[in-house]
Length: 280
Image (cartoon, rainbow, N blue to C red; front, side, top):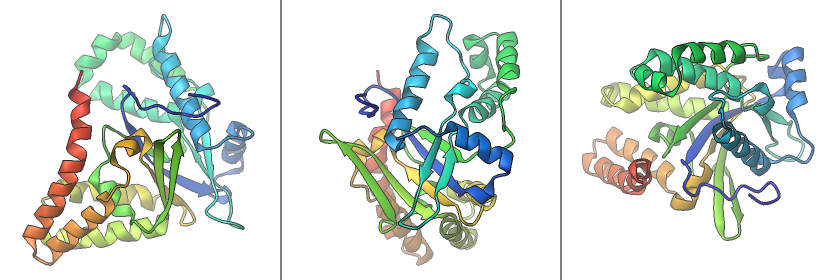
């Protein structure tokens, strides 16, 4: 990091995000006042990335690390799709997302691992403390994925959608693709219709159902953003959206050879990234 510029991703997990930006009218007066209070003068996407990384490293590097973030670590991103277009807002809701993740961890198959990290009483104490934060009732506007991007996310975007490639010092810091929520939801619904007739047994079908339900809960004036994060340095320029759409079209046409070829291209591109999660 230098002057708020995140040059990272080296020896850190690659985290990619899918986030929703919403207009002011999507929030109540109280909710928007809270969001306005999180804005920082001169902020941009990279400065927010840097702040989030600093917050995360600070939590784990203290002598008595905090497993869960505090409200002081909540940030908000802003987006304008063009001249004269309204400003859209995407709070990172780090506290609310951490509560949801911790609750899932403690109730799922990994609860024994959670107990090794912290005693149950300490988990309970930290969750109770975090639950006192403001506006936890807001729908979560961000989803994240580590060590790769789910193929279902590529259903939402095309290569000719609005794209930002952020570079510095010869490195690709991230790639961000933005598309209106109604457009993304339409793509999900069309794909679900095709899969329900052709291959409802695919894991992709269930993933898209969940994704479509999430998108449908937001204001029609919103924008969904696929943010590659540091993994962009390894895959950009990325043909994954085209390969996913081509593979599905081949499947719909009964061209199993073409569908298999598209999947092989995706696997060859992303398998080395996912294998990094198991490397030393």
